[in-house]
Image 1 (cartoon, rainbow, N blue to C red):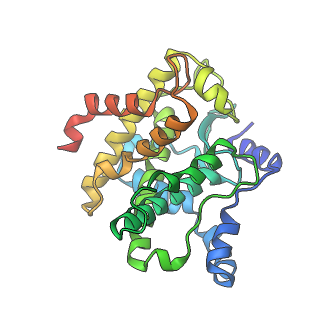
Image 2 (cartoon, one colour):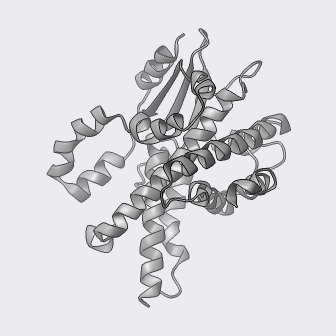
Image 3 (cartoon, rainbow, N blue to C red):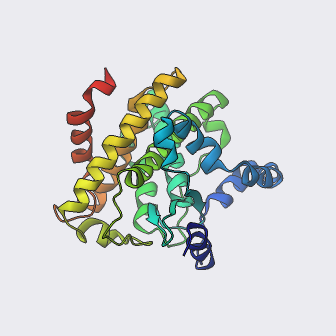
Length: 280
């Protein structure tokens, strides 16, 4: 199978779509419906997430991804993965619900912090995250991600939330591309549907070493991109996604030594130990 055929096969098996569309339609009404075809044509995964990352790589690094297909798939499972096709091509997929989860998380950060500052809810910080965690724990249920009315998120704050959301999503993409760049696919099988149980308990330390290595490579690429773009987003904003991972693990349970992925804290320690100069 080619990368495109794998992608089309995934689409053919989709039975539960992400609730992202309903969320945005509830918020923006007819405006979103009118803009939806433009969004689809715009190709968010490649134009917004991949292009800035790939354009900051060296020519030799970019060449590795000449036969890589990057797609967002409308699946309720909260996941991202990279897969090698039979013909040597690669497919990288980001599940819609994962991207929606990150956006909701960023909104919650703003709304909860603002209400605490305003004195409206001094004791209730943690409760804002409960619906987010509940949605993660039951990704294939009909539970929807938290959504806040427009008046709770001023325009200037909405822009910041979007920028930070993109930064978190770019780390996820950079990590998946790193698996390809580091040739992590020979002799192993990558499941298209990691269950939560397998994610926590189903692999070995060799897989964890690959995750550590992919994190390091992702940070190096993002560091280069940040320096070349010379904008106000610093490297820490990209890897802040691990705070969300840690929050989920606090509720779901921390991965063991035989899990496919190390814990968020261990991954952050690995980044600190191997990429400290990137944050100077």
